[in-house]
Structure formats: C-alpha cells, structure tokens
Length: 483
Image 1 (cartoon, rainbow, N blue to C red):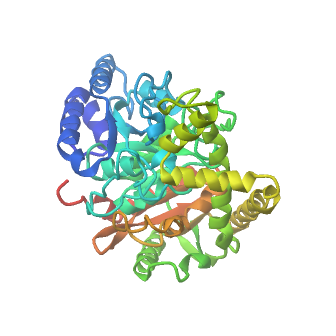
Image 2: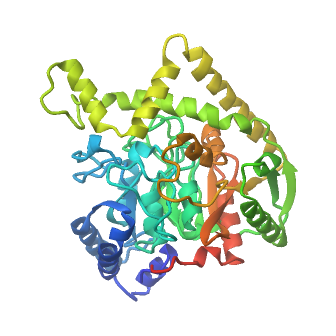
Image 3: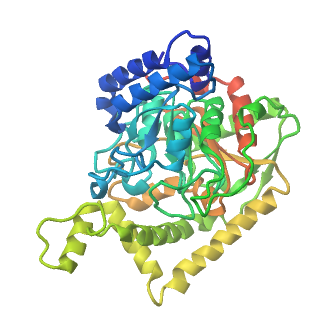
C-alpha cells in the first residue's frame, strides 16, 4: 500500500480494495518503523488520523466521493492545527498548540484528507538543508548522510521514503521546489495569493506561499485542488477562480513554446546537471514543444535582493516572539529588557538570529534606502524580465538547483554557500510566479530536478507539462533503497 500514489489511493478507495482506516494504520506503522532514520516528523497525530480515516470511510459508505476523501497526508509544521503542537521547527514554539486550523488544513480536512502528523522543517522556514530545526536535521532517504533540502525537507523526505503519498510545504525562496529536486519528487509553488496564508506562520509575508509535494504531477494537481482558492481571512489572497487542475493534465504539448534562459547555464551549475536538463528539453521536444533561448538579464541580482527583502520581513514578523505574548519565555528574568533579550536569544537558533539581525540592519535609519528600497527596485526589474520573456514563450525551463544534495554539515560554516543553492528558485518568489520542480535524473546516485516556470495562475500549464513528461520518463518512479 505504501507505494500507491494519491491517484491510485483514490481509485483503490472508490473500488473498495481497502479502507482509509486500513491504509492509515499501515502508514502509521511504517512511520514508526522507518522515521527514526529520517527524522522527518516532529509530531505524529495517530488518534486524529484514525478518527479522520473512520469518518472518511463512513462518508464513502454514504455515497460521497472525492480524490482526497480518505487520503493520508501530513502538514509542514508551520500550518496551525487546532489543539496540536505547531512548532515551526523552533524552541520558541515548542509548547505552542494552535487554537485554530490554518485555512489549508481546514480545506484539506473538509475534503476528507487524513492528517498523519506534522513534518520537520528548518526553523521558521529559514534554510536550504533542513539542518536548522530545533528537533535535529532531516536525512535524505536517497543517502542518509546527505541533506534533503529545505525548508520543507521533512515533508519531502517523508514522501520520498514512501511514508505517505503527499504532504504540504511552503516556498519562500524555493523551499518546496529545492527539496523536491533533492529527493526525486514533484513540488509546486503556486502563484502568490493562489493558496491562503492564513494560519501559516510567516517568515517573509510577500514571498511565502503554500503548495504540494508528491511523487507525480497528477498527485500535485489533486492536492493543490484541495488547497487553492480565495480566502477572505487573508488580505493577500486573490479572488481568482480555481480551475480543475486534473482536467488539464492530458493536454497536448504540440507547439508549446519553452524558453531556456542562457543565464541558467553559467559557471556555478554542475555540468552533469546541465546535461540532464538538456536531456529533459529533448524529451519535451519529442512531445511537440518548441524550444528557444531567452535572457533574464537581472537574474544575477536575485540573491542579494532576496537576502535583503526576506530577512527584513522576517525581522518584522518575528518581533512578536518576545517572551510576553506567546512562545518561549526565559527563566527568572531580572527585568523586562532581560526577559526580551534572553527569551529571544534562547528561543531562536543561530540561522534565525542571523537573518533577524540582517533584516533589522537593512531596515534601520540611514540604511533603508540603500538596501531595502534598492532591493525592491531590483525585484521589479526581475518581474519585468519575466513579463518580457512570457511574451515570447509559454513556460521557462531550467535546473532547480545548481548541485545535487550535499553532505550533512558540509555548508554549516559557510551560510552564503547554502544561500547560493537557491539561485534558480528565488526569482519566482520575488516575481510571485508559479514554479514546479520535477525529477530529471541522478548524479552520483542523488536525484536532480528540472524547474518549470509559468505566467501568473498558470499552475495547470505546469502540471500538464510535468504530467506529459512523466508519462514518457520513469525518473519519478524510482524509490530510494531500503524504503
């Protein structure tokens, strides 16, 4: 059962080959046996899962149907779940039990999805390796000595290891697409505003976006269908109709215009990954796509702009965690200033502290114009580059990451080296565009992803291209040894 995709589970439940309760018990047992190797979960919700599974079986018995009805999933541990610990991977929120469900959690629960637990993540979603979590690093199931990518590394590792068929993640600068690439999954960052951020603990509010992680584009379409839609509780949610993502999967790629930016193939890209990307292009050409070289001239400025904007927003968002309102509080403070300093110093880990300090500096008097304002202007130039490119092509294709996964701890002493792993993904967040990573092959036994970007609200186009590619390749079917 653990090898079944979401789509196969939906068919199996509809045909009464097994019940949701049976499937849930199998996966909970599997998680108990295998997750100690991976550390992909922070919290398991066995009682909730079995209750939801029984309810889903009862709904099916009463004639209800739906692709997510009875399907087991997990949530990245920054989606608030009522009465269940929502830690954000941080000591700061280790004892926090959310008093309500995030919109994403509520929508998927209403669709009948079964929540198996909350997955491990980089602390407050800050990281590219899932090593900054208060609960310890997550291991990559393809090689337990390597990182799974971050910050949604717990969700990615759990799905890749077949502990469950799909999970939610969030993407601020590539945190769905990058771990998807490093663990051989399909991961989708929707258009900014497509999925509600209400109840999603914020890192950088103008960049964060929730999305699905699964083994196939077909499964991502099913999960996104349950997550997407307008939410009046979220002021950044966009009131745009949600199409049937599954219905568009089988469209022909004949005449599809694919742009390949020349800037993607510079000195920083592993040449073996470049070869795999070119192979992916050839495969899509066989399916009728037309490929042309394009330019994104301001891409070189993306990392410096992102690492001003994101920390600036983080320093503002995380100011609420002060030891007074909620979150960790230090022992025996001598005065209010001591309470603030020690609660935040003890509650936040080194990476979060680093980004708060950078952000506070960028927003400080005398530096706002020099850093934050300039970064926002660069952000607009990057968006303009994409708008110009999409006048010529339908999608943009390139590598998801410049390198395959690296060894645990290899980049801990050089944060900038880890930041550079996001070079291909952060532009989509700065521009608010949808992006998808899909499996494209292996380098030294480690997975590699190819990234697709599309115009606003064209998630269906991305899923269509990825699905057609996956019908003609088998990279996404490979399973890590031992799982």
